[in-house]
Length: 93
Length: 308
Image 1: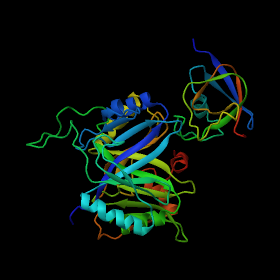
Image 2: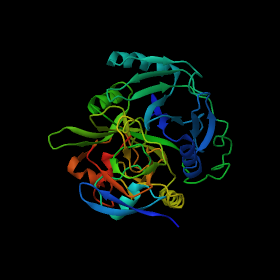
Image 3: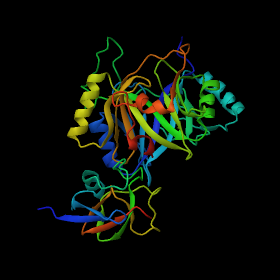
């Protein structure tokens, strides 16, 4: 059975559920929590850029280097990651 | 009117993040045919109804987006003539040798527009091995697959100074501008440009970042095929942006969606017949939502703010 994790958005303090096989952006879109726009869902457009403040996640898709740098730790496009634990995320980068 | 000078946008090369998944999207879902792979790993594709060698190239990269596009012109003499006119306009021209980095293509000349996009022109390209029949032709030889995309149709580019870009297309390339969108104080927001009877071969939106692309579009036969395309998006879990709907601008029927690397695609059918002597249609920017999505009457948030 798919594991379900909780994802909390720091600035709104709102939470949503996200399955271990579900992209975080997909779960955020379904929940209507925000705060980021949903765009291409392919790691290309960068509108879902957020920082993971706590928790484990896995990147399951390549993210565009225009938006994501190795120098910014845990800054990701949330269309490309799935949770491996409960997460706290923020759009304030 | 005879169709001469610039005939159509015949080639576009895109950067993609996941080559294998993205090739599968364009072949299995859109129904394009893979023509060949280059030594450096790029994949060349074409629509079933195109005669020329290929029209879309996918290049694996660390970012998604636009590499360059090329317009086909009617003759080698036109290519020579346009080279002089481009230089006179103030853009530096470079030369790409035949069969160098695009299989089947003859010599090309290239330049960078003020919007930051590299455009090229060419006159000669080999006929594809798979092409529509010529003698007593059937409508197709092999049943079209997936969305049944017939050919590459147009692209919408984002960049600065689109007034100059449009002036270049008109004064140098001999194209015309069937439709524009302006702010209340007369600033140009968007412009739709063609070299033929299509309502647009390319379009520009004014934007501060250079070299960006909003979408590349492929032509479908009709509204029925737009519905077929929507079926294939649903079956294949393709991320859809807007549609099926209709534009008032160009009047085409449309769906916008995403390839697996985040580049926006459009499938497009219909559209009015553009003539250079028709009055230019003008949109006020506050009516742009209705112009783009005629049935909905308004923009969706992601449409103009998401690009690669």
